[in-house]
Image (cartoon, rainbow, N blue to C red; front, side, top):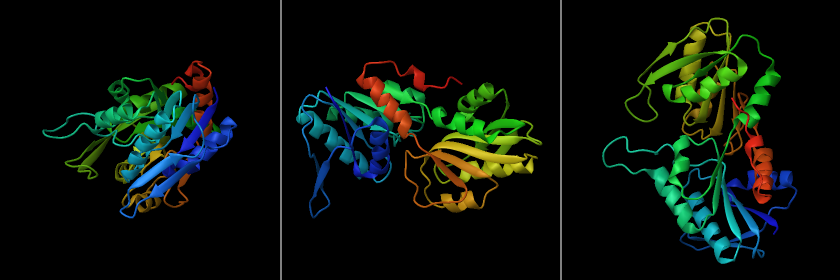
Length: 309
């Protein structure tokens, strides 16, 4: 049973690196596009009896997710033995609960659709909420961005390091880094009336003379993390950096980052950057996913891929 790795069009840049790190060429996917925009992807080689891995992040536009569903269905109908779906960035994960009346729980709906399409296993990285794994009735391998961020932070050789979270929801993530590095933790407590608009923010913790690392799972408009960086600098932080796995970077995000107090923001390549920025450093997750593919194919534990913080 051989491994075959395929990619949707949105994530080809990353799938090529994953396939190269694994040591196999990226499989062929062809597309037919109707004049009204309807897409029809088809796999350009036999997958009968093979262990298939399909790579596609589900960031906007929604056609990326639709393309993924069609590719899963195509692989299943082509008699693939297993259809393993690699979603480096799991979109719609922020809608993981019913926080007000008459709203959808989009993350659960996405899980249902992936299962209905024929996925046998999901592999993803740094879900916005860990409990989303429970929305699936198939195995979910939830990889950890710490694999790439911890070595990078160590390479900086910073003294008086301190970790911070830009909101109270990220305390668990930031505290794990603080514990691993034997550092203190600060919290930027924000209040917002609606999505992407911060009403106010206050700092909990003493950051005077510290090299502060803000920790988050994703950065969208960058309003929160930039406001937090400014607050930390105002309170005496020596330097402020940020690590965020998923660079959604919508709206004025690039301008916000470049005009902020951040020294740099370190992200992964789960989502491609729209443009380069002197303050944004990209680390690749390709080696992490390639190692996970090999272990899953060989029916081995993936525990060795986790840095226990």
